[in-house]
Length: 96
Image (cartoon, rainbow, N blue to C red; front, top):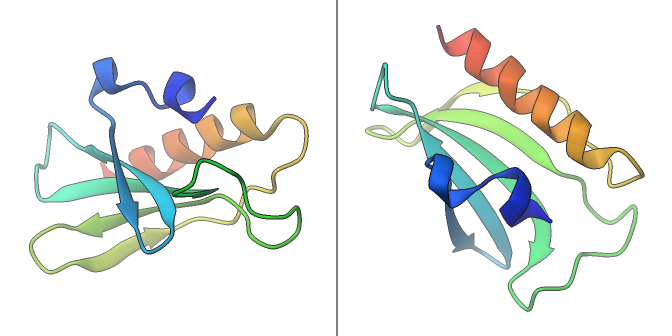
């Protein structure tokens, strides 16, 4: 479901950081900034237990690897996809 929401054809790249999938998007207006979505999906393809972790959205400076924007968590309850999309758009709007 994350692959549909954060589609590679729209510039999202899926990687593994630690034990979970992380989706990143490099902004076109400032290529030194990436939006990251920590999915809470473990690298074995299974999600962590409900309540064990939440989806997190942030932006980092790719040169320094330091965070520049942090948003609130998105809990994995019904409607998580729309809330994640809203958080991603919120973070992108703060960049510019």
